[in-house]
Image 1: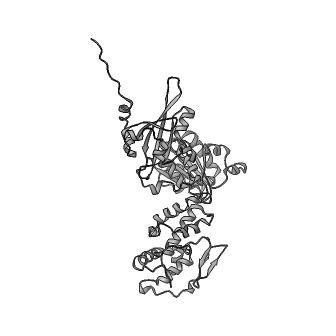
Image 2: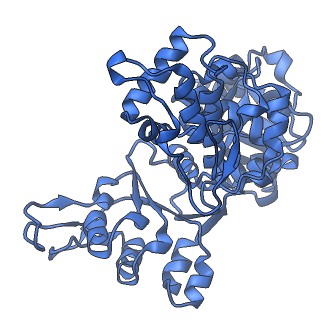
Image 3: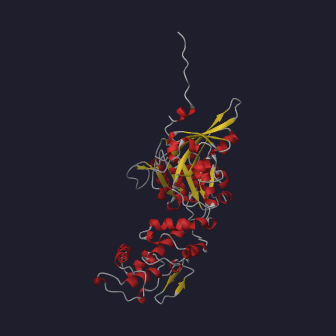
Length: 460
């Protein structure tokens, strides 16, 4: 029986069977083939997309992404000849941002040289972006996210360093979400808040009767984080005896509960953070040398806010979007932004959020101006509208300066509420103490005055 000629399927027919967006790119960054899912994603017909550069389609840029400081999978594949995996921020045809996980593979010619790169992508933005995405596209943030995009899909231990308030916990959440264990739990342990015995019990768990007061068996945070990520904050505060036990866990994946006789094994990714110089602590014999090197498999320095001031407007407006009544003040005026840019933020991102919350309270439903921005940590405004500083400690004025209305009247005068908030630097808890009411009452009054009195911000 004669054999019939069978026509082989074209490349286009094959790649259209791939369920996720898929594209083939040459060494000049030009697209030579794209499947239906890729074309649909970016709203292109086949004839319109062939020959265009990948960075123009997905980054809306005129130059490759590595020239912006990002990790370029194409450059990596052509330079090394090996597959790579990375997370990038892509833009749809309408300019909307989305995070995608890129998996790039080399396609070789007959001589074994890389001829094309095959790239598939998975969209990761099926969650609330405001909670899991790092805000800012300054050069410092691009360098940071490039590092995070490369380490997130791996299982490497990450050490986050940087000043207090720079956002290390947010960065750890970012790594967890874009990791391969993102479906597992994200568990936080703060070493600065626990004593030695309590920390061991919290981290590893304990058996019933292990010590006085251990009336029940307790599951530790390591076990709670199984299949997910354990974020160890302020690891520099970990007592030396526990550093040895943590090192064993990092090296073997096994641990023993307090009072237990057998070792347990869990699958946990470790991210640690500190604002102290661990290398100096090693030299001072306050931190184990072997643990230091185990933690620094992939160190990441978080830049302070003063080194990425280009991100200030976006960060400030992001914080306003999360504060009750804050969206009323978006977008910020040029005058407010200029004033924000003059300050160096020793408290970093955390301080910026506090500044925006105070400004939101003080402005209320009025237009936010530079006068509503209070930068000094220990500054308040007294009843005579005088700015008073206390360099040593935060001082609350004597409540005798006020003639508050009787509680039997059911409310406080709006001017006095606003004045109390101003005197306490926008801190509702201190304002509540000053007024002699609960913090919940202050929140209720602020909410009510915002709704009922458009002139709430004007004490005159």
